[in-house]
Image (cartoon, rainbow, N blue to C red; front, side, top):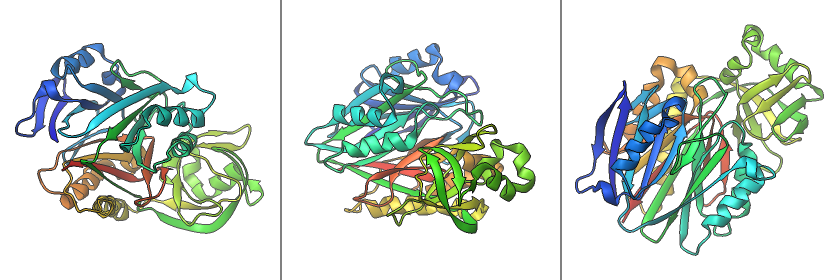
Length: 381
């Protein structure tokens, strides 16, 4: 595997990491992460196409871009991959072409099915999609239990429009799934949060998929506001500082769920993922050092998931916009923490998202996460 990176920042392209022997015309895949106005710029898209004429170009809007151990806003990070022994296939669709997000996930996985499929990397719309339902559809049509990782596009802190594209300008509502095939590719994955829980554990008593109405028989929005105190006047933005810890019935794993919007008339809250009735929830708050340490743990989990101990050749980091808004000037520290775990010359790219997709552990199904650092590593042998 050979890698070349380019960074568009301050209105000009700057060269980044390049593996010796990389050939632009032989690159099969380019991952483009950037500010919404830039990933929808035809001039920029055409430039990338001219550099890598044979590549599948997958683009996503972000809430911040990652390259190396730095975090940027209003830029584009383009990472071209030249596989030597691995085949890829990209499948794309628009959520509006399907009955729901669940059917969208089923459709995408069906398009990628093959005996030698070993992993799927997903870049999804982040506003129209129900991330939990999308992941459920991906898992439903995954008979080989291959690893599925990725994330949801971002739009800064605006939560207005997100854009994803495959071999064309990024548009709203798109989801792209990249299948990797063959016996010579190893995928590592890790995901971790680092939030502190507080307050009593409570039970969801009324919900509809990702809409929450009642907790312990009480109106969920009013109860949430009681805990927020002065922060309630800053909703829904302040909700990023206080996500919910969720444990679904019949599960021992804890997920994190972030509020996207509130409805004062219905007294309801809309989350980035589903909150099934009967689930246990607790409020969470930020612990700066634990958030940064959580990124290190996610990186170490990548090594644990590489059963043969392969050294990664590329790392894709997808971290939640909520972490970035909380860490602010310390945001670079969580990326640096990841870099310290990996070898110093490992190329790193990524973005800040509206949701992260990854299994908890090797051999387990993928889940939708919020407020985590999620890492996918690639290596050929």
